[in-house]
Amino acid sequence: MKALTFTLVAEPPERLDLSLLTAERLAGIERRDFEKIQIGMSKHGSKVGDIFRIAGNDLLDIVFEGGSARLDRVAEGMRGGSVRVVGNAGAQAGRAMRGGTLTIEGNAGPHAGSGMRGGRLEITGNAGDHLGGPLAGELAGMNGGVLIVRGKAGAFAADRMRRGLIAVLKGSGDNAGSRMIAGTLVVAGGTGEMPGYLMRRGSILLDRAPKSLSPSFVECGAPESVFAAVVDRHLIADGILKRPLLGNAPQKYGGDNAVLGMGEVLFPH
Amino acid sequence: MPNVSVNGIVIDDTFAEAFGMRATAIIITAPNRKWARQAAITMTGFATSVIGCGCEAAIDVELPPSATPDGRPGCRVLIFATGTDELQKQLLNRVGQCVLTSPGSACFAGLEGSAALKLGSALRYFGDGWQISKKIGGRHFWRVPVMDGEFLCEATTGLTKAAVGGGNFFVMAESSAKALLAAEAAVAAIGLAPGAIVPFPGGIARSGSKIGGKYKGMIASANEAYAPTLRGVVRSELGADINAVLEIVIDGETNDAVAAAMKAGIKAVIELGPQRGAVRISAGNYGGKLGKFIYSLKDMLP
Image (cartoon, rainbow over all chains, first blue to last red; front, side):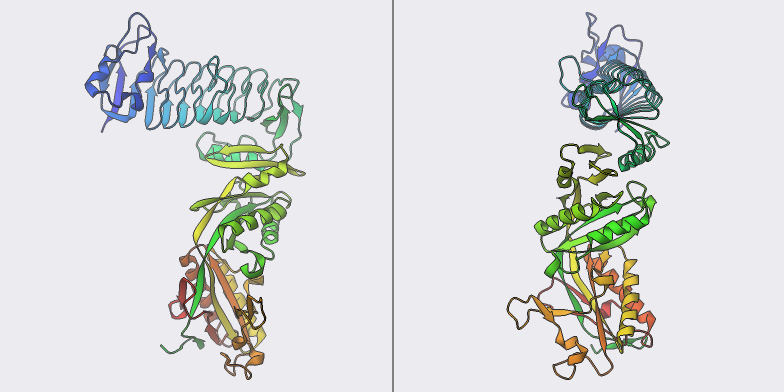
């Protein structure tokens, strides 16, 4: 079977909700009816056939050729297979994913990987604010899986993260790892102000000292850490980083003591 | 089939009889080889026989830094017991008292088995609330604060039900020194065979036993047929040329691992030759009715 390919014909006239175009949601719909699915979110009410040219039929291998910041909710809730976006994606790409792989060969908008529980989301460009974070009213953000941003991430990356791994390779905005409940956030390339703000538990692993930390973080020394060695080796073996991030005895700051205080910010000593 | 002779060494026409066991493996790492070995040796101390130690354990292989999860020198330790519950208990007691306590140590699963045994998921309570759970690349670790930093311990390790305990052979020589030299050569060769251990002191048992005894409550007692001082008194298995017998007992992760280890050990004894080492090789069994695994010596020849 050939990959089910949606080729963007022209820049969409409105924001699109692509959450209907996943293997799970398309299963049970006749191939010829795909073009009639409504994805437009305004009065235009665009249908798939108005926006994309469709080829192939493998639901477990979906490709969006040509991207746009208006392509929202790509691969939302996907559980298996692969989705590839050749170009940019809009808001909430890979939201609530549970399995499979989503690759965005471009930039992603805000809330990419929001609340994901499993699978692997890789963004080769930059990601917007609230990477992996919860939507308004939700208690937890990312809850499992692996989220890699090869470029930069906006503010509040890994907000309220509970489980899983987020890696941002070219720096993040302010308040990375804010309100983290647990999980691991890796940021290479520097962070903005106050990473780990109000984090309860979890690990924020940096390639350099943060330029500022909330005053409720405390210095915890730099003993040798097998955990750091295991993480470094994993990040390299998984193709996320090329060089060790932390070294064998990273500096640790513990916090945020304004809340539970069992989190940590680690960076090379 | 009559006994055969290889390189001047008589090989008895008999077989070793071995039993199914439960086994697990862990990988212990440390800042250097010395301390990895120290932790492994300590946790496998007093683990020669399930008869009195609860388990049989020893270092399987030493691992170079490139082969361990944290890039430090390590040892793979194999632990055998007769049941899953006892194996679990021995594992936690030994890792908790001997590995957790050893400077700079870390502990990882050494086996992917049919079921999981608790490791860090039980030892984490030493952290008294300060322990940290971490999942990295699909593996679950616990980080327990200790006085030189953190004890990193994988949450679980694997259990195998395909393990075999009690593979064995006897090296029989004209003197104790020659028997010891032959047995040492066998142990050195078995040390290179993966997935098998020789749990007795230095890999060698001098008190091979029979089941039961004349005294009530004795699970095992002297195997008088192989005791040279009783050669004239009892129905002995020893000829006039034998003055010392040493037993190599082998536990393996699998039937094949035991067989490979026996072959390697017997090959080393044969290569040493009868002048410097053993003049005869035999094996222990219970008539073949008790054990599930049979290793005929004639199949173990090089």
